[in-house]
Length: 310
Length: 317
Image (cartoon, rainbow over all chains, first blue to last red; front, side, top):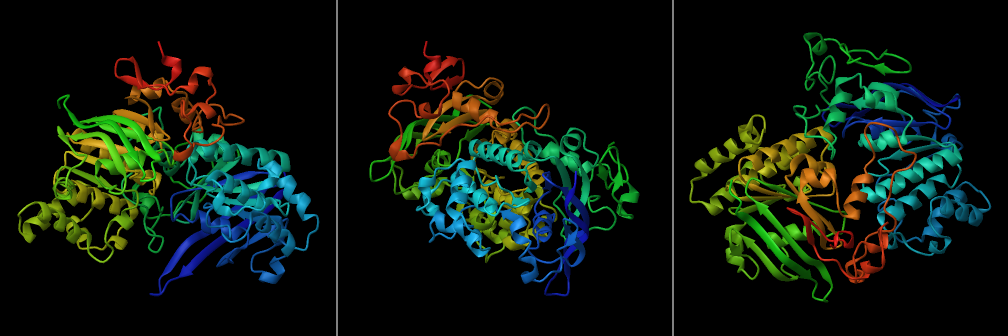
């Protein structure tokens, strides 16, 4: 598989008013292969959304680089980045706030192609509406006339208008009811298969991720703590945090497990050593002193833990 | 705890001034020491059910009966409602950030509720607030009581919200999507807390869209669809063998967490009807895979097995 997007030692820090620094993403390296779906998973504040945005040039990294097809795209000016924008597009979580309420769906869908000077807009819209399962008769309607599920379909159609190679989808199903969620999960999977578009899914829902992704990267306080094939990782997690996340998913077929203690620590004052040691049921003295580095555990799997479960 | 019903909704019907029915014939029971999960998708009427129990829907016309500790609530005066809310029954909401007043410390808000219902001094009220926060698992409760809502994490705010709800020892706790805004690891903590409250003898009514949450915290479940209860029964039995096609479809639509990965998830075609366009027959019939001619008549809730009820023609004897 050829590498489409690569991030090397990517960090994104925000300076706060009191001279403090919020380390949203710290030293993350990852690759997305052509046509592959990578899931970024973690709890709020773990940096998954910041990472997703930084990957496609929505905000430049504090340090580190992003390469698209081998060319560096981080640190480029907006103007220079424009050439790359059609190749990577974003789908946001809340489809009710990402559409201009005063524009018809037809106008909104046409906009990306107009901006990039493409022709054949009407045909392209018709093709895409069919691909996302909507009829072409809706073009004169306004966003509020659609249900959440339909709007998310339109959201996806808009992101695909320019025929991108990479889609970054930030929680694409979490605002939806479970029956509609299943429809969108299936749609995204079908589109990936038929169009060969690579995806970065940002999600907190492990069951949805398992259904949609090829690989998974689990994040905690701005760092990747475990990465690998999605089925391998979720069937037998190597990091205690992945295990805890998996156990905490409420399921109809099992009882409530004893929960993890405490909250996610603040990314402004992250703990010393392993960031997870304050909540880890298996923490040892070493964990609070020395930060574990990502290392290989088995085929294509890495984990940052002194005492991995594998 | 006895089998006496703490809360009993009987043929509760709720409609807009225009005559559109929002709830049609909702009958539910919550007993002490039980947790009833009311589960459904957006717009199904699950939150309306909770709000009507709290008497928070003054603009709507309600008929039927809501009995709490043997007393009829429908038609009760505002003053009586106010005495009941907080002391008899209390409610927690999805987003504790908007449920707390942002300009007063959470301790002050809990103190106020205690003093509103009971003649105790400020100092006594604060002592109770601190003890409650501690029991809810808030670390350093004395300092936490002095904090403002925005200074607490989402999980701690929800714990404080629950402390406030429990401050006057209500017999019934209504929780409307209490963990939807929380991360999974924090959600598990709050659900554990709700289980402890249930086990201490209070009745709990949990409104949620998540079958997993119901399965892990509730003793009973009622599945609502388009303003009607379509199935109810003990949680273990319903999860093991859902009777109503809608319950079955809801459970199937959850992606699996282990075993083989399906190519496509089972979905429910279409979407729920709006209250003004509810089908005359079975409300789920237009989306149901087993639909047949006799679905054109609205099926009644029947009891095919002891303790289980379902409204579907498949179970008409």
